[in-house]
Amino acid sequence: MLSDGMVVIPQATISRLPLYFRVLNEYNHLGISVISSEEMAGNLGITSSQLRKDLSYFGDFGIRGTGYDVSDLLKQIKEILGMDKNRRIAIIGAGKLGTALAGYPGFKMHGLEVTALFDIDEAKIGQQEGKVEIFHLSELSNKKRELGMEIAVLTIPASVAQQVTELVIKAGFKAIWNFAPVRLEVPEHIILQNEDLVVGILTLSHHLSRKLGS
Amino acid sequence: MLSDGMVVIPQATISRLPLYFRVLNEYNHLGISVISSEEMAGNLGITSSQLRKDLSYFGDFGIRGTGYDVSDLLKQIKEILGMDKNRRIAIIGAGKLGTALAGYPGFKMHGLEVTALFDIDEAKIGQQEGKVEIFHLSELSNKKRELGMEIAVLTIPASVAQQVTELVIKAGFKAIWNFAPVRLEVPEHIILQNEDLVVGILTLSHHLSRKLGS
DNA sequence: ACCACCTTGTGATTGTTTTCACAATCCATT
DNA sequence: AATGGATTGTGAAAACAATCACAAGGTGGT
Ligand SMILES: NC(=O)c1ccc[n+]([C@@H]2O[C@H](COP(=O)([O-])OP(=O)(O)OC[C@H]3O[C@@H](n4cnc5c(N)ncnc54)[C@H](O)[C@@H]3O)[C@@H](O)[C@H]2O)c1
Ligand SMILES: NC(=O)c1ccc[n+]([C@@H]2O[C@H](COP(=O)([O-])OP(=O)(O)OC[C@H]3O[C@@H](n4cnc5c(N)ncnc54)[C@H](O)[C@@H]3O)[C@@H](O)[C@H]2O)c1
Image (cartoon, rainbow over all chains, first blue to last red; front, top):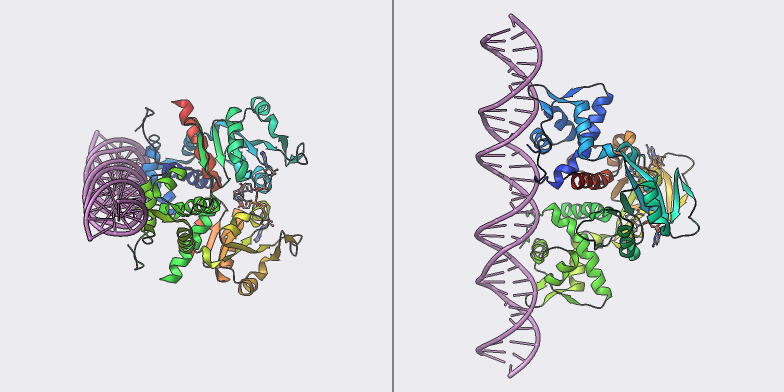
């Protein structure tokens, strides 16, 4: 399958690729060089046909009768997810959440690099958060050019999120990962991903209510 | 619709309820007491029929020809999501992410209360994180009984997540919100929700790659 | 070179979620 | 009480996603 760029890939498929990446890394670490879809899916708690279908959106990576070459498949997934590009990230809002994310080693492990933090609190400007410096928001455009960042992470209060979004877009960012609990208005060509943590725990709360109530 | 407990409610529907809650709160704040599905959906960037269908899973909350009573619908959604129960939460792992979550006012706003933090680092035990005390993990059972917590949030290293999960279940927690990037094995009756932050940003990275490559 | 066996890749099928479109019904006005 | 205008609630249709089931194609042994 594939070769032209017109194929629509389910969002659910893309969401599973990081899981595949992680379990493949474990196999790699254990010295397992070939893995069947059946075994890998078993480890992940999904069906083998779902795994195969997911991969088939991007190409024919397996060997019939044998399975998938672990390091080859790792390379393919890295490429699909852009992990081979070593993308640079700016975090806007050096508060509790922003600094927690800045120090998260999981990003580097997935080919992402937090390159700068931005804030407007003068007390924070110039400080280091781990190895990452905190700049004033007014430096956003400059530093983007200088450091080549592509993705902006918004960890700022909801009340300022829209206006900061506009600055971010003006600075030339093409992708925004938003943690503020607010719907952002962005132009068509900007890629926006909302991370709403309250959804997860309220889903739990709902299931608790249903279970006890039935 | 509804009255018996056998109706299956789409996960996607439940995930949207917190958004409805938020926008309804805004209307409430602005003194708007009645709202149509059309207007509300417009504000959220979804279709009005989706909003109406979502609500219809839980009951007939609207008034034909008029719309929905804002404060009534708020009350209904609170009940559906268990926000009226004022659920108490334990956070296991008082590290960067755990303490960021502990101080997040969004929980209280959604009827959730972070009641205790747990860790095994002696240096952290006894400290206060905001108004929340950090206890030793060995106190988990005691404190659960004492404080009546229902949901355990796991913000601990992936390497210890499975063993801590077993402690959490033994302590009597029925719901787990897991931030560690690992698949947890839990019994049937435990409600598990995984929060995988890497998925969000790798989705962005993937879309960046696709867009530039096409 | 053939055979027995294994696992992929994928059309067909089944299941789930969203959208459509309109009957039902409520409100306001006369 | 009857009419007109508005908006809900919901079956039916369409779109989307997961699973099934098997032909295609590969491996290893003889
Ligand atoms: N803390 C959490 O666990 C958590 C969880 C989910 C969502 N969120 C959301 O993430 C956002 C940040 O949360 P937090 O807990 O880190 O808050 P915080 O108050 O600790 O941090 C916010 C930071 O943003 C900075 N800031 C304010 N206005 C700014 C501007 N115009 N430009 C740049 N920086 C600005 C502040 O100086 C502060 O450092 C909020 O929208 C919150 O709702 C937080
Ligand atoms: N920091 C982030 O932004 C981020 C983002 C996504 C996921 N996560 C995940 O969340 C988890 C925590 O991340 P973090 O950055 O807060 O790490 P951290 O190292 O800052 O905190 C981990 C805490 O867990 C404690 N701990 C270790 N073993 C324990 C045990 N057996 N029982 C109780 N507590 C124990 C440690 O003492 C430490 O305080 C990790 O699994 C990480 O992968 C973190």
